[in-house]
Length: 277
Length: 309
Picture 1 (cartoon, each protein chain N blue to C red):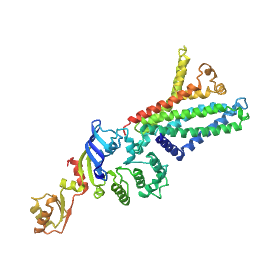
Picture 2 (tube, each protein chain N blue to C red):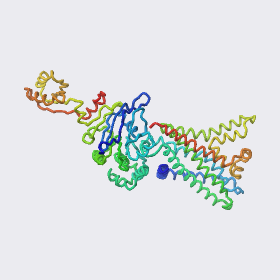
Picture 3 (cartoon, rainbow over the protein chains, first blue to last red):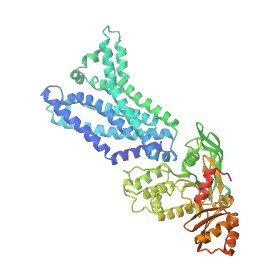
Picture 4 (cartoon, rainbow over the protein chains, first blue to last red):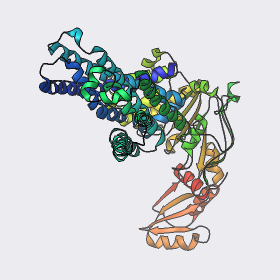
């Protein structure tokens, strides 16, 4: 366990040192603030809290950004060290291979979660302060849900990135696969599902099947978590109708996302174990 | 008694990748207090041998024992604490300082961080310790790599091409450090291309070619066993040259006569008598030079012909 913490600590130190955290935190805060102030223009003064609006727009944007940032951070976890020659050195130390995968993953998760929580948190506080409704009326539970689920979404794609990195032999290949995975989960999957639903004029697909298909994609699970999770937000996002029939508890959604972390990570360890040096 | 302990014991080890035998039936022991140089052209199997010793790859057949433990055993993880390794090419994270890099590796070995200052002194990097590794020169990075291998005063030192990129002064310092550790009882296995610098510094040389161990012994023993011929370079006027070629052609192969310089091949044991014959003949020479076979030639003849000693 000690070795895992040492490896995680090194990863965190690297991230802090090369300004990665600063850049991502600023990016997150900047996006959140731009959305908040652009987003509040059309609503004017309504009973809906400014934060609730921000959650809707922010989660839609996070679906694109967080997986991309997470994959960029993790795709060269193993393959990068392998190319620099430090992997062989690292494994000559009293460290097992699963400790390398898990330690690096934990370090990266801390980094990314820190950037997300700090970036979004700063923005949320700024929005709440500017808002005309009282601070206590704000959708605080919604924003906490957003922060936690965003960190979890990041962890999912960090785990997937580690899996890619443990599998391929060259950095270039890893980068290519990472982009492909990103496109698949963020764009292609939903387009495909939408096409399927549109083609299904006879309503042959049960609600359960559609829900299962949505749950199978971690980004959709994240979307449902944030848009359906809070009453206000689901009204705003137009998902209120959807949620009545396909209400999935936040517990199930969190479980799905945690499985999306655990399973790729497990296979990353397995593949790394078999990787020839 | 420490002289008889085999720190590294490799017994008829084969490592194949498909049909290619990267390491082919190698037997090699390194005792405590011994420094063995692993020599061979690129692709001869040196790095694979290091990986086998470290337990990073498993042998196809044969056995390896490091400090009495086999690398594929779970307990080998504890043995790793007693191994210092310097890979052939290592690029440490440029964003960290030298000290942070050593702190990381020291804590992975579960060693005290108090030794870090001493390590920087040993490898002469004290001033650069708190600078980022990205500002280091190639030689400085190599010295940082060596410092990393010395953490915890390991009983086994495995050094893959340790002196590449080092200037002559650092090279000297490097061999002094290794010698000190060897005298303290460490078993040192290092690989190198720079044969000439090995001559006085290693107890034994193990020559690898195409995965096979073609020679294993002291450099002097190798030289005499191979019986490489010396060359005698003679200078004379053209008329004297003609005389030389008629008188000595039967006994020795006079390779080339260029610009009044003739080169005669001569087996080591006949060197003295040939020079005597030359001097007592009535040929007038303007100059004479005896060229001994260099280590590079010893090496080349071993690895090219796959001659087995």
